Picture (cartoon, rainbow over the protein chains, first blue to last red):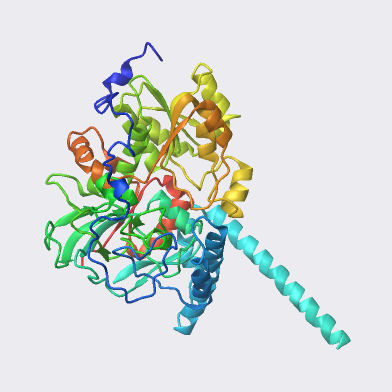
Length: 166
Length: 382
């Protein structure tokens, strides 16, 4: 490779090379402002009109914040609990992951309560499988059908045994 | 308005949501014309990022037209066509002043480790993103940039994340003329990192991935070598051999937490969530770089822990540089490269979808169907 200088013909080769550019980003623009800590002139503060969970590693909300999907339901209770712990703690992150999974079930309940039956096949984008990956789609359908079949058989056997003894 | 709506891991749909409104004097409302699905959106889609709430709209790579501005916005006007960097940055805090726009301290209440990002979970601030007909854009005088006359809209769109992230990956590598650079991952960011490595004077650029169609693409697009780790017994050993048993000068992790290639990492990082994603690419980067070399990380990981050979970092004297791309900082230089023809980002776009087909778009990108590299959502003109 040493003798092959063809790469120097690549458009723009070496145009941004700057051996003097050390130390490189992200520390090259150090201004010294860090020693003033968090005492910069803050932007105007956004008015808070929904519940925002705040990291306990900062004293107040950031000047602006997102207002999407405020915490609700059981997942919200878990999220509020998680925010009692710092970002350094599993007590913060693991409950948030749990809350995310519970939130999925809450989402389905919310859909049903609004008269929407979630089309899980469509939401999982299986149309794309039908178009580009029919083999994988057939495999998915067969596996799910088999699992469903086993569950139905197990449940019906349990029911029969119960009626025999009951 | 119509917007992408997250319903849980591997489940999204397009549905009606209320239009966004101005909530702060420095806000703007953008009517989105194009929006990408990013490889890092897949980490959310796969349920890997904590505090990803049902009902959220993803999307941090978008452009569009300004339709409303707050009372304290002076640089933009209604009707401007802008690209919007994925970082939400105030421009005033100590970090923004150092051009660390990805680390703004006034845009994310929910975590101090990351600045605000559009549509990237509540861990990144709880903002709805741009996979929607309209989006609220805070600090509109700081990030959004009017698209230069003559620039292809697809090129402008990819300046919101992919191009700056790939470029910064190469930049943080501190590449010296003559260096051998290894890029792990031939996704859109890896492809762009490989392309940009030449701008810094690399003499050899090697890309490692396991998807043949992407390797073929990057070989042609970035004039580089590309190898399938699936056909290499040990990618680290291969890289040692091919660098005269020395190691690469610079290694770039352009994969992040969705990496394949190591069963234990996949199990603990992607299936059981005992790690903040699978750290296979980073593991290989650390072990493939030379002693005293530089590992540059732009791959996205979650906020908990990862299994990496930190002892080797110490013993080899490796410098690790990492950050979210500071998009605003890089825009002038990257616009110049595109306008001069040195970079051609739009060539990586392989698929276009209307917003209504968001579920198929995500699934196709996630499952790598139809040789998908970069999907773009094109909003209806209504």
